[in-house]
Image (cartoon, rainbow, N blue to C red):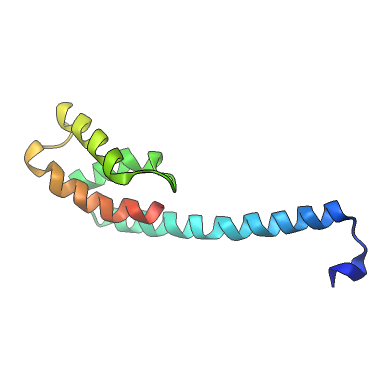
Length: 100
């Protein structure tokens, strides 16, 4: 038990913090791997959208807003076709939500 080790209170707190941080980082890596695997199956245009939006995704990101902003800019720049951009964004969304 930790009480028999006679660690100072701060050492116990640091150890508890380290365990908590390592536990939190595992799902993040798993989610990243799942999202990356999903993105590999996307069509080229949807994959381009995924690659453009993925770096901006955090747990609090509004994906719909991020996609709308990025895809609109990509359409203006000619990086995606306006006729297919919506369908590609929906496909990319399926993978991007796994990053959250």
